[in-house]
Length: 278
Image (cartoon, helix red, strand yellow):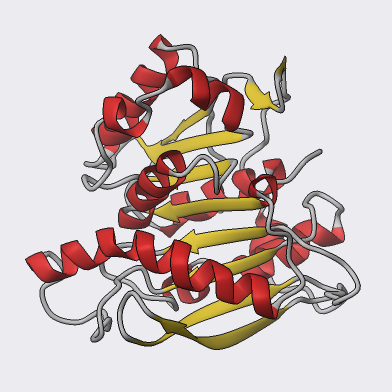
């Protein structure tokens, strides 16, 4: 990957105090390549019963190198875009390779990453007209599937923490909008929120953050990024402008580039290094 430029950096809110953080640098090429000589995590495909949809649904789960049931891990729920499914991040971004490489350098906390299908409907395949009304509704309905079905399944079947401070949500494009909507809409469930090239499904800032005082005391990390040539940049900027006006700490990262995995991988690379820091 090519080096990229951060043009705006703000302090990040940790616990109940303001601490200036050093900017996380854009991705180094070594973190984009498989390395034989380091320990590796594992990718599994799971089926979980969704009462919301009325069927069993698929998701991918990354467990970190050395995963052990004798330890308790935090979890990142990583969401795909409007044309993707539970395989999109794995095929286009290989977060498992990135996290393995970061873990080998002690740059990330050991974590599980859950990559679900964010289209909560019985036929959730990424085919046909992705903007069909029933599919757009299914992306919104995924909030219930996530909270009521998927998260309980993960917490029952894996050695993970059930605390909100050990739970993160992030995504690209449509999944970025979902992450802002679901994360900021459920501050009792998520403390760490990331959006890479958030799509038009992102709610208006006043709806995302109706209680600015609560947001300031509840959010451990809010990370928003987008490319300068991305036609969706306005949705990230309006959220950033609102957060800035209301003095809600966050990272806002803008880089040269468009709506693609070059940017999304850079976003995840930086976001992952900020997650679950005590």
